[in-house]
Image 1: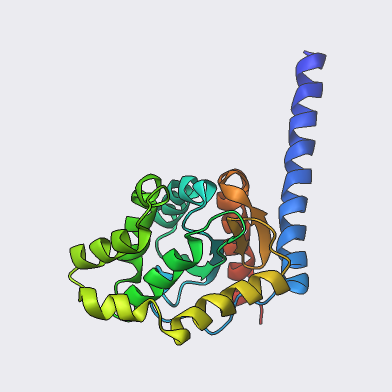
Image 2: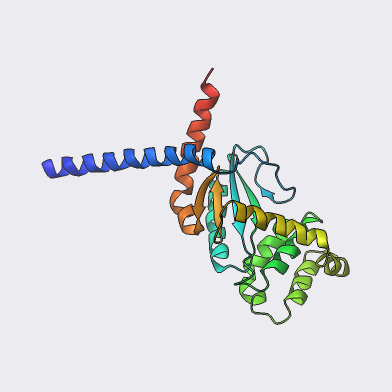
Length: 220
């Protein structure tokens, strides 16, 4: 009986430590990371614009870990459909992934026609195909055509300097925030590296943040 009691005490203590850790992460993240209340990139936000909790995702379309993280993101968005919005940001790791920047530019071209997320999903679903292709640009044009986008217009867009600048702006932000790998997430400013950390801590952090925001609303 005593052994059981000691075990219960340890479990309760561990739970308290974990709760304190999460609350500290939330408060520390707000102080040390960029504020999540930023100008949202039009067309690259998934979920309600007015959702109180923001997940920023720095990602690379040719990155296998980024593809593996997608089901984790979809699960969180499904669990908290009214509480969470996802903001996608480009961070193509060009030294490792030769087609990553072109892929990012392709999604930006699709965004001009309000089809960013459709193209985003297509690239991750078919990552194993186009990432090994010898004619990746042609593959991207095929995907554009499948989404009813004008092929010639899309092809010209891929060479548009403004499109390239949009990708570079996100990459510069990633570097300024000391993002070193993809995917990296900022959940209300709290850094989570990789889908594993997001899966392990995401839901718990969201619950803590929901509680903190609710308390904030109740304060006079």
